[in-house]
Image 1 (tube, helix red, strand yellow):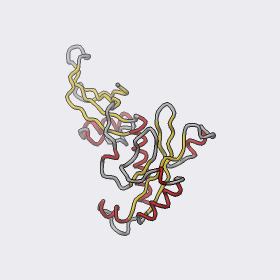
Image 2: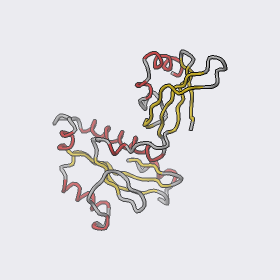
Image 3: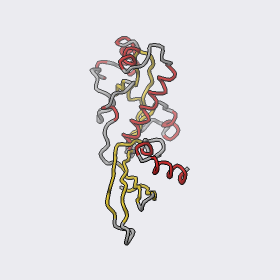
Image 4: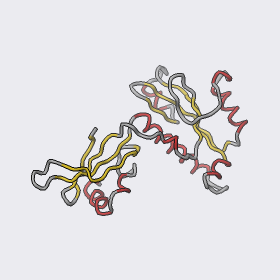
Length: 201
């Protein structure tokens, strides 16, 4: 579905479309390990924990901390109402649903010093920075779950009527609608990117 369009030099147009078949960002290498539990949805990363083996999520967290040398851990909360939304900040959901009808804790995202080393980070990496990385991963996963995913097409306009077009370039798999934050601006030509920066911002 077409969301926005921008005029480009040389009689071209940049069209932003929703990506109806986005790739799951958890299929890539991530700094965090996302362990989730839900009866109807397969969320987060693959793991061997079974909710039936524990009486609460607190017990699961204790077991995770026993099993791993956890560097930092954040709780995950899921809203299931006219779509899915996931966050580490339960206050966002409590404001609109104080009775917890449609949301609750669904799991954790955490990382370990060993995993960070495997990802190429130094031993003295700042944990506050690591936490920001995990928050970014949750943000991207939320965009994936909520359908906030996009792609673009560059079309050449007909020189005679200005309407008929041919797609000359396209790319998909961008999370979030802001072309300056989701990476679209970075894959365009320098000329197109500079023009958009001047005309949009």
